[in-house]
Image 1 (cartoon, one colour):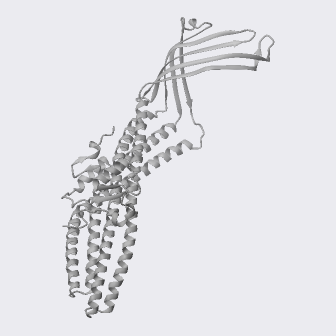
Image 2 (cartoon, rainbow, N blue to C red):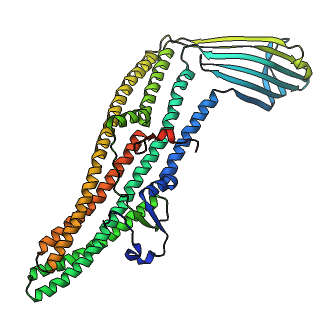
Image 3 (tube, rainbow, N blue to C red):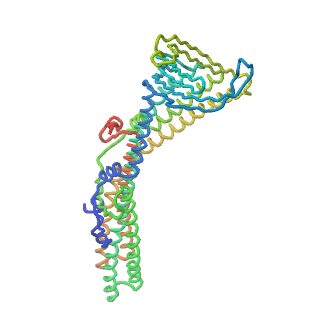
Length: 492
């Protein structure tokens, strides 16, 4: 069947002769979607959003590994007057002082997820030089020191990070695929908007030619009194309306082509030729299978689980901090002080340190209790909202799948209606030419053909929009039978 549904060639050399030498590209729907996911600004934003989440997860993983840190004060020079106590005179006096100080510390730290504490192993060296009437030099060293510090309130942030961060990264990965499918959905919208604009333009051009021909025939028939002058004026009105419609269609065509070129990040004046997809094959998607895929893959479901975990973390944190705050820091090692560098490491003395700090709220007017109750109530709100959002997503999946399953029949029906409308219009036109049909019948037949052509493109558009929306909601390709998240290579 020769109709607009098979191939749309955007004949801009006819519509816009001044741009006939501009760049031309021919695209079908799949090529348009691929180009959108490769080159569009929306795809670029999506990729950078994924990379941001990827490096956040890399940071979390890096925090689980030992860290090596060098802390230094390479040079500190002081020259001032300070107050000192003179024991011989039993009074405070002001003395001038001049000194140089340098310090360095090299530490290895390792977070311990099980308890939430931190082990550290470090070494340090300090140097001090005093100038003046009684100059002296000192070195102080800690050859090695092993220590451990942690909060004793019971809240373990590392344990919660182990639950939340992998889930966040899984959500980020699936959000990338979700956004890519959303770009496909947008590309489909722009694609069919241009296809519809070209259909309207072609119909308008054909209508101009047809109305001119019918008007000339009408003038001949008026001479033999085959039609009335009112009918001839109606034909003349059709000519004027057809030319006005063509101008409007040409403007809409330019706008639709510009929109698609901008979305694909092409030159704004690129001439685009579209190849419409043919009638799709039979594909019936079970609603239960779509729901299962959505629950497993949809990043919004993962985001709801993340919200609940974060709310539970806040409840745990505020509950344990509402009692009292306590922490411990213990270390064992060696240290020494000497006037010469080599002696600073000679026969170091054992160094031990244990400190426990406690903060007990005696009167805080219910501040900590209020924070705990706020966190607990917020958890209930998050759980309720999450369930509501889950129901909304499930409803959207069910409705989209249901629409998709009936859309194939609508495409077939629209194609059949288009065939019949073309045959009917051609038959009515011939009957009008030989005087066996009136103007009303001809106009009605033309309107039906134009409406059938619009309905066919609209049915194709709705089919493919629902198809890519299902892919977006479920991250599953039911046509090929594989999960998009399983097939996708995140490293690329």
